Amino acid sequence: MQRFALATAFSLLTLAAASAQAVEYSQVQADKSAIHFTYKQMGVAVDGKFKKFASVLSFDPAKPTAAKATFDVDLGSVDTGAAEGDQEVAGKAWFNTKAFPSARFVSGTVKPLGGNKYEVAGQLSIKGKTQDVVVPATFTPNGNSGVFDGSFTIRRADFSIGEGSWAKFDIVANDVVIKFRITAASK
Amino acid sequence: MATHYTKTAKSLHWLMAVLLFGLLALGFYMQDLPLSPEKLKLYSWHKWAGVTAFLLVLARLGWRVTHVPPALPATMPKLMQLAAHAGHLALYGLMLAIPLSGWLMSSAKGFQTVWFGVLPIPDLLDKNKEVGDLLQTVHQGLNLLFVATLAAHIGAALKHHFIDKDDILTRMLPQPAKEI
Ligand code: HEM
Image 1 (cartoon, rainbow over the protein chains, first blue to last red):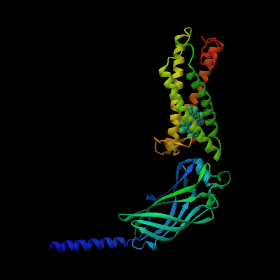
Image 2: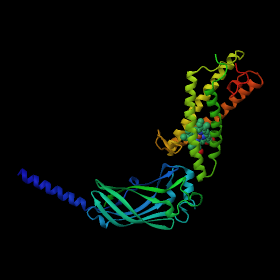
Image 3: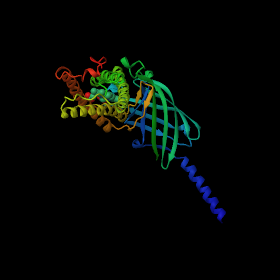
Image 4: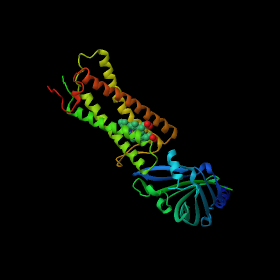
């Protein structure tokens, strides 16, 4: 009897686990999500973030290759840590937010790397320029929701971010690390 | 008792005088510039020079606690002697507090100080806009106080030299007029 109860409990558990796996995470929770960036200013790392972005996401850990993600980042919502910095990067030489208000990432193929690691290939468009990027990410389920974490490096010159007197990399480096944490609930 | 300052004390005094005037001028000048690579460069230089000034003032305090400076002229009224000591104390206090406030402000604003781009100075404060703005006001206020104190310091030195005609100024000059 005891053995039977145990077996039932066990199969129920695996069933529960399996059905939990079939969950699709698609409701992005803005308040638990963030997009940060880090660059070097005269060799010193400086952080910033984007306060506003919209995303459409669907991810089923059981079918990762079918996952899809689109992000639209409001470039005007940039926080460089200084008001005059925010104003400057909204301007023509940097993002030119009047002409190009947002940056867009659209996922392509998703490759599971084992464990909770994935590699998302996609296209990143900023300031009218589109580049292929590969974004490593991890997924951590947490109750009804899950957290995607990852970071990748872009070169600002590939997108003409920082033109004119900023075009040299002696003061503001070319490499910019984009770091994100996206929390999404299952439906 | 010594009648003039030692070579070390004089060197530190005049080296810091040049550095601090440079820092004050640079500080007031740089912050009104429109944002540009040039401005960011000047900010870094200001921070590096400021940290250097802090280290020099520590060296100076090291000299001060191990030496007895020449006494003030006996002809000086007690109250004036007291004012002179208070003024010097204020200068030391400001020379310590100003770079400290600059460093803390930079930390709070999220721009770490890396001395000459090589030696990272730890951030004691976390990034926090309100604290950063407050410390900027503190740095600015202390600097205005410093300018006022320096004006009194220089004014007093010149008064001693030209009106009282004592040796207060010359005993800090590279070659004292009458060395004993
Ligand atoms: C004895 C040393 C120093 C002196 C005499 C000095 C002087 C000044 C002066 C006069 C200003 C302009 C103040 C204003 O009107 O707002 C200034 C601004 C500034 N100082 Fe210093 N400073 C010193 C050390 C430092 C240090 C050690 C740091 C950082 C590590 C620093 C960081 C700054 C910054 C970031 C500003 C610009 C504030 C802003 O506009 O955001 N300073 N300093």
